[in-house]
Image 1 (cartoon, rainbow, N blue to C red):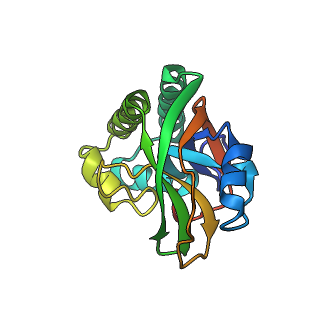
Image 2 (tube, rainbow, N blue to C red; image 1 turned 45 degrees about the horizontal axis):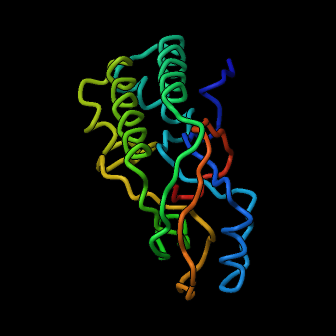
Length: 192
């Protein structure tokens, strides 16, 4: 039975960069980037199918219960979102993952955006608990699907993959982020 939240897709709560063209032109001199998918990941939930399988294996959670709790989690997080957030781009660096390296813009989020992130992560831990996981933080740290080793957040915007050097970029500044939404993607980029 194929369902909305137990397919092969990766689930991410994210906010798109609203001033993409401005950011793209700032970066164009340093490197070519695609400005149609610039976003800030607020919470990486992970590959839906493998997360469900892990939850089921650990807690014996039924598919119906998992789906109900997932819908509740996503609705709460989206309902909490404002229409727009501001953030400051503070630098550029390379993040390495087990899959590949990524060139990212480091972001200093507003207090409102940090509160949204904390809310979403706290409710994700409650989601796991409601699914029968007795130690959600430990599960999140050990899960192969979500791999959230710590509650700390490194807010960033991925602008390139397979990049090893950091180009010089001038004029980094404020970005405008849109409303939080759920992205379902077949890609697993390794860094969110």
